[in-house]
Amino acid sequence: MLAGKRILVTGGAGFLGSHICERLLAQKNEVLCIDNFFSSTRRNVEHLLGNPGFELSRHDVTLPLHVDVEEIYNFACPASPVHYQFDPVQTTKTSVIGAMNMLGLAKRVKAKILQASTSEIYGNPTVHPQPESYWGNVNPIGVRSCYDEGKRCAETLFFDYRRQHDVAIKVVRIFNTYGPRMHPYDGRVVSNFIVQALKGEDLTIYGDGSQTRSFCYVDDLVEVIIRMMATGHEVTGPVNIGNPAEFTVRELADLVLEITGSKSNVVSHKLPSDDPRHRQPDISVARQLLDWQPKTQLREGLVKTIAYFEDLLSQGDICRPHRQGVF
Ligand code: NAD
Ligand code: UDP
Image 1 (cartoon, rainbow, N blue to C red):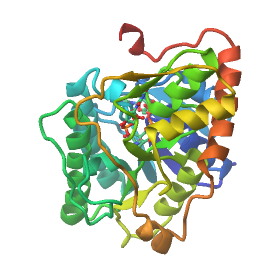
Image 2 (cartoon, protein in one colour):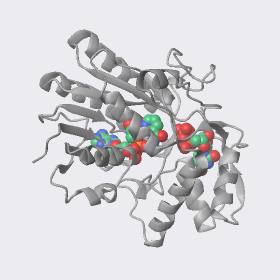
Image 3 (cartoon, rainbow, N blue to C red):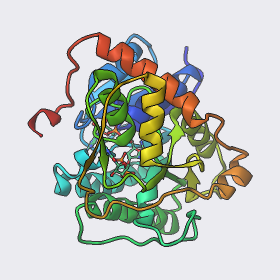
Image 4 (cartoon, helix red, strand yellow):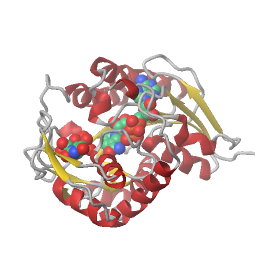
């Protein structure tokens, strides 16, 4: 008999979603994981399929969903620039129509709903580090806009559903997060560098590598997301969540090479347009409100992530995500 709640995780087969599902099941909840497998495969949740509390269903959040749940974690959306720029119209639909569908569901069944928002809300920030009070510097018509503006509009919808319908919303702005179950061909910097280093291929630095990111290990992030969902009705966010330790992309490449012992070369590629120069979360709100701060240093998190990729690559052919074969 499961004593916990009935919980929906959208994008539950993705990198972060799969860790959320796992954590919720460990707490004896019933988890309905929905995903359209646009940027993930079943592999991430295969180990959960035998759990009586777990159900996996193929569904696209741009379509309405009728289920009876008490909490919704809305994580469906490709997160890697390579994925979200592949079909930008679908990316905006996923963020905006997906949010409307899930908020409509939350309203109907009186569920709490948590939105996986993003540091991209801040665009190429002119304030550093970024506090929640900063409104951002986003290009509305660039190649990243489908994601940035889609996520911004989703936040608007969350706050309007709160004001108009008193839905219990929680908005977290996630900064770059990495760890096991990122897809090896996902295109994000941590997975790219690790896979390239392990295969002895050139590490591809975009631009001169002086741009910065602040990388959070997945276990730290899952912890704060669960804490945020557990807060009372008065807590809505937005709350920045991430690790404030800031690194240049070049420093990340050097660290990956050092830990893997790889002899790969580092090569320079063109910097993609609108690539943010700097990114670092101000996590004062998360510290105070949720009594949380990340524990995992980049080196420690990379060691675990590299071990995961080593194991994965040793299993031979990696199934590419549903749509990625055509890139
Ligand atoms: P991911 O690509 O691994 O996971 C996203 C999942 O959503 C995938 O399983 C994908 O197949 C699914 N999906 C995409 N479109 C869908 C649709 N229309 N209907 C149903 N499922 C759909 O990425 P992730 O890193 O796990 O990101 C999860 C969420 O967290 C995203 O909303 C992302 O914007 C947010 N986020 C992640 C990071 C990060 O660093 N990982 C940073 C900021 C925000
Ligand atoms: N990047 C890179 N090489 C890669 C992939 C990414 O230098 O192979 C850079 C990218 O240009 C950006 C940073 O690494 O400056 C982080 O990119 P990612 O796609 O992981 O996430 P973003 O924060 O840009 O959404």
